[in-house]
Image 1: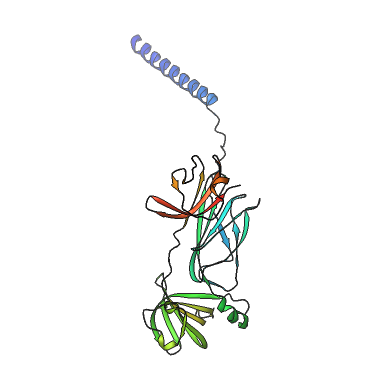
Image 2: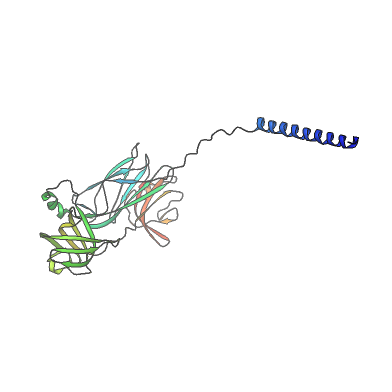
Length: 291
């Protein structure tokens, strides 16, 4: 073999060894200097502010003069119960619990429960309740004390002997059983008592009673009425920046409202305004000073 060929082979082998050694050294260096990936704690997500009612469900029948609204929310939050007629307020305790006695409007209405926490967040829930002190006697005569009085509400779709079928606001069909002593009241004609034969398909009714195992409502009291009205009242928590005899900030004051008079308010105070938004105007019904 020629001398030049031997030298070329030797040089190639030497270069290969050098490159292999260099690659091994670089890999070792990178390994030693690689950052240690220690597990990172998962950041806690901020929980949304909420308000929860206890023991009250849509279409419960309330027959006492006052009903207790109780539930849970953030600690030390301002809690409002707003009906179409009146406003009620309280503050949740250190554990977030609250309880407040409320007087409801007659018949079926929507009640709002609104909370404001210390971080400036607000939360709202709604419940539709039927208020009838006339139903108290039916509750007293009910032998099954495990059942709560409830109401089926909707439009009559069928009438047969002793039975009425309605479609509720969700489009569900519900069955109502009439009793011998069921009272029929037409609230569209100044709450006059009528007969079962005065009922007609298309009537909007509120039937109060107790539901049996077949989900049929045995009704003791039935109202012919109009569909429920939406509760349009809102609540706004603001800080007073401008104050005059006619305005708080850019909100005009009415002639009368429920709450402190203008002389007892001052710049820098936090207050809650309760009213109805009519386009660009907020019509105040109540003012509440935030503690």
